[in-house]
Length: 61
Image: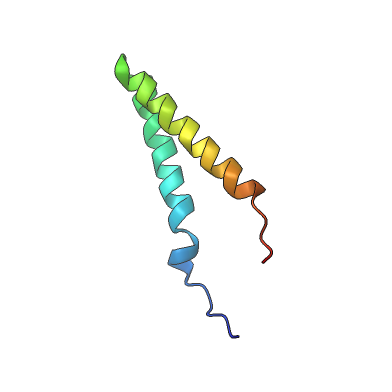
């Protein structure tokens, strides 16, 4: 079965979203206090869990 070539925008979509969320969370954690610190750390922890899951997943079928 033929595989379709990946479009460059599809390849970089998830990493771009993760980078933007990381940057936004770090800026929010530095600037705003209170509940926003907890929210920012929860987002960063979620990103870490997602990246660990995807990194440990087997690529073979």
